[in-house]
Image (cartoon, rainbow, N blue to C red):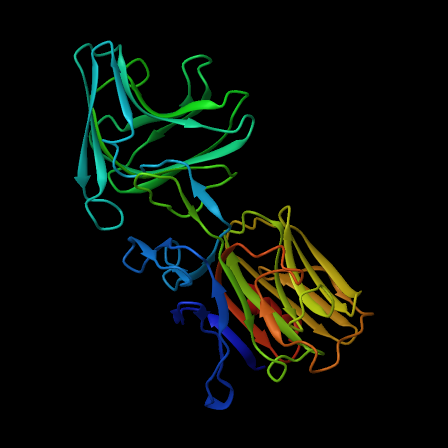
Length: 398
C-alpha cells in the first residue's frame, strides 16, 4: 500500500502561503503543497512550549498537546479586551472593606517576554471586604461569550473569581478558579442576559476566599463564541484574527479516483458546522467528491459521482474534541468508514466510482467554499489502493 500524499506526522515545512505535503514513492520526492491563507498574524504554542506569534499567511504548527505538532486551523475571532496583558492601563480597580489590590506590569509571561501583570491583594480586615479589577465593555444581549486567560499563583491563597457584571443587575456569574504555580490557561463560557453594559471582573472577596495572595495574569481574552480560540494579544484596541484556510494539495496523477483511502488524525474539532475535508476535481461545487464532514459529534463519509451520492456512512456519536483517527476507503461496490480502530456503520456494497483522472485536489473545506475545517490535523495520508479491514483497524487505532 502506497501513500501518494503525506502531510504532518512530525514532518512540517511552512512558509507564507504554503504548507508542504508530498509524495515520496520509490524515493522520488515530489512536493504537493497546500495553499494557505490568513490575512493577519496569529499565535501558536511552539516546540519550547512558549506562545509564539507568526506572521500573516504563515501556517501554524501547534505543539500544545503533541510533541510532533499539529496543523492548527481556526475561524475568524475578535478579542474584545483592548489590553490583554498590561492591566495597569484601561483596567480599573476598586477596593472595599479593607481590601486592597495593586498591579505591577512587566513580569515574565507565557510568550517568554516580560509583559504579564502581577496582582497583589491584601486585606486589613480579613474575612470581609475585597477588591476587583474590571474592564468595561459593551456586549450583545443574550449572546454567548467565552472568557480565557493565563494565570499562575505566586504566593498565598490560590483562588480567584472572574465574572461579567454591572452595577444595576449584578450580571452574569462566571467561575472561581484554583491557580497552580505554573502558567495555565483558564476558560469559561457564559451567556449574557438582556444587559449590554458589562465589566469583565477579576474579583477577590474575603467573604469567599479569605487571605492575602499574589498571582500573575496574561493574555486576557473575551470572544463572542462558544469556546476559546488561540491567544489574540491586544495593546490599546480590540484585535481580530482572520480565519485560516488550507487547500489544493495533489493532482490527478497521484490521486486514484476509483480506489483508495483517505486517512486523517485530527483533534480539537469544535465548531462542527459541516466542517469538511474533501478530495475533489478542483471545481467549486460539491459534485465528484470524497468528503468527510463533522456535525453534532458525528463523522459522515460521503462519495459522490457527479451530483449523485454513491455511498454515505455515518459514525454515530464521537467525541471530536479528543484525538480521533479516521479512514474512509473506496472502490467499486465497497465503501467503508473506520474511526479509532472500529468500523462505523456497515460496508456499502452497491456504489459506483469515479473514472480515474477525476479527483485532483485535497481541501480543508467543502466544495462550495463553505464548511471550512477548523481544528488540529496531526497526520493526513492518501493511499492509492483500498485497504483491508485489518489494515484499516491498525491504521486508526489510537
